[in-house]
Image (tube, rainbow, N blue to C red; front, side, top):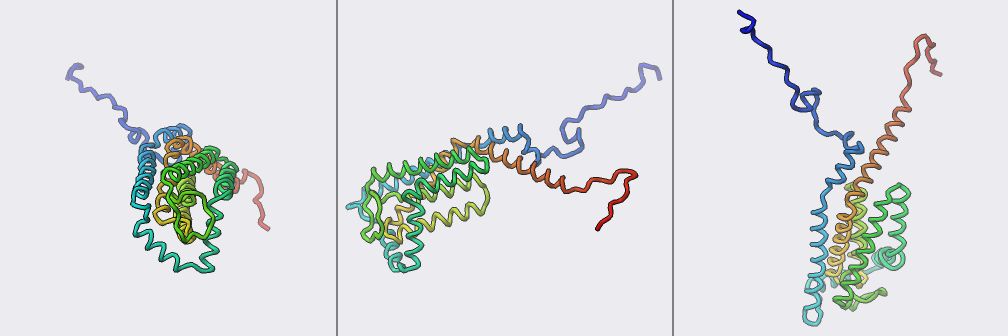
Length: 280
């Protein structure tokens, strides 16, 4: 065989993928999400279409419900409004009064409009979540503004069996809208299942207490839920990127602190030639 006929060995090809090059799976891990570049990329990828569409749909649904209420002859309540009111009136008693009056003070007036939102914002600032605090305040203000707009637009009369002092306009319920905004906003800021469960329970309890006190028809509370959820979702779309960036940065900070604490509790290896440590 001549030199020209000698077989040649083909050059080694570089691995096509990161998995072939390293021998490991290239699937992103939790640690990857904690890197600054990964946090920024994830914050930018966070979609805004779903909260915008959902928020607008909820507010429009509330407005349409109010429109249906206002065009009914004589501003009459729905049949399910009257049936619910009759059932709730039969449940009035000392325990229900205490719970409902407490919810009335918690969800409205100075406490509901100023004290609760400011207290939540201060708590978020203490744990170094300034964007979350700003989002919570803005969502609360927008929710209250939409409520007042719809109240003055439709001017629905309150039920005759009302036993608390209330402002003008029955539709939608401002107490319930405020509760729904708090529930959704906190669920977004602290994305844990128990936060959503507690928020939903709080909103439903607020809705039940408003009808118990005769301050609203049940349809008013439905409108309030729609407004509160819609306002929180719309403001989430506006604050989505900084909120997610802040949340992931906080997660990275906590993870690093926990790792440092775990490392501090690890016993260092003994130096060669040093006497063994005696345990007492």
